[in-house]
Image (cartoon, rainbow, N blue to C red):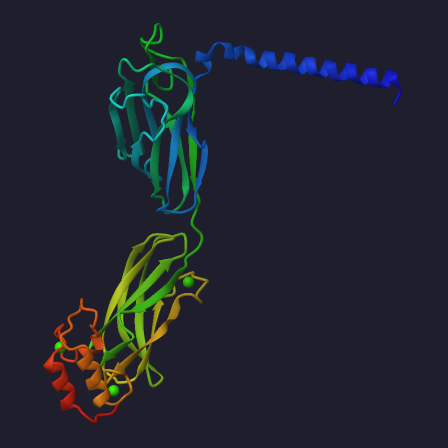
Length: 368
Ligand SMILES: [Ca+2]
Ligand SMILES: [Ca+2]
Ligand SMILES: [Ca+2]
């Protein structure tokens, strides 16, 4: 590379640098008047909510403000798409006072039914002397929403005060912005998109029995958890069964009502045992119209339930001296004592005593 090319290149670089600097200077000129660039905004500006029942939060932020001492902001949304759940000043919000006593919250309200189409959030906050005014950028408040639309759709998140020259009311503690209409500013509205539902899909996700071992005629509680894996709110039946000699017997059928997408619910079936054997428990959620993933609707309990003859404490299908020994070892026990053994409570009164021993004696020699 010759010396002339190098110096030509350096000159070009210098020119580009100077032009960039001048350009940036030009871009910066409007920002000299900081008040004119104060912006209230929804953060994030766009949000996609995946399904009905989904809960999320949005911030209302302020950028580039000078000497803010109070604000009154109204936020409007489509109440047929969203429910406003709550509004709060998060930790570290923009008007956080140095002394917690130096702030007055005049309004912090969610009116989800402002009218037939709109919900309204209304927040009015002022600092109190001697708190200094705040300058810069930050979060004013946070709103929690829940998706209520079953079909999907759009909800604008709009910042405005009807009939007011600026989007909202921002007040300074120094003239001229102490007086209406306050600090000049603009606003960036947001938009929430709720995706249209597509999939119907329910599933049985767990079966838990209250015990793995019980005496014939006793109750077993079967906890079945069903889940809605789809996009729609669903109502469906869950059937709980046990199998005996290859034949399925129904323990019960229960209806799950209005289960939200991605939610699960646990229902309890009460099973009165009738047959001495090892039982397999299963449950299934009814296949919905248009459901394609049907493989997860039914499931079998990973554990079995052994139903025993009364008095067979040690679960060897015979009532004999070994069972008496086990009960004798728990004699005097109640459910909260260290020696408690629920299988030893043959006469089920929550106390292991002579009645339990006698019930074994009366059945001595019986086999399953
Ligand atoms: Ca399914
Ligand atoms: Ca036994
Ligand atoms: Ca007892």
